Length: 113
Image (cartoon, rainbow, N blue to C red; front, side):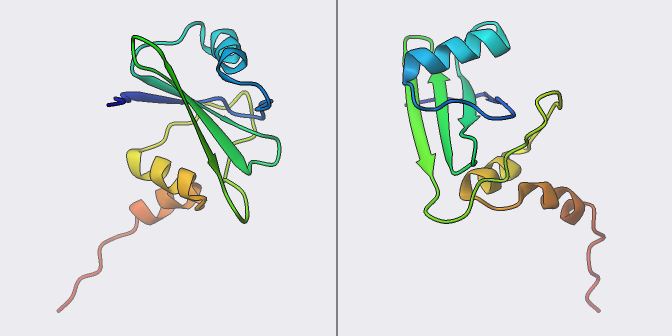
């Protein structure tokens, strides 16, 4: 079973035409080294495909997700630091606007009388 404790987004765009070795080179270039139970997520230029590289401590896993319509709400600013909750991650990979969850989370609860 794949266990993921931390998810890193390689914000901006990435060349997804290569396989595990090319993405691992990007992980090393951006993050220093692949850590066990960490996932590294990359998006193509149009943000219609994601590739997730997971190091389980013994080997690498490569997962791909492609939307049939639309695109992922992928952060473009390579200098930005993005922190996502588990629910925001679920929204991101579903192709939903995860950035809007922050505003909804701060809304006051509705009192029913």
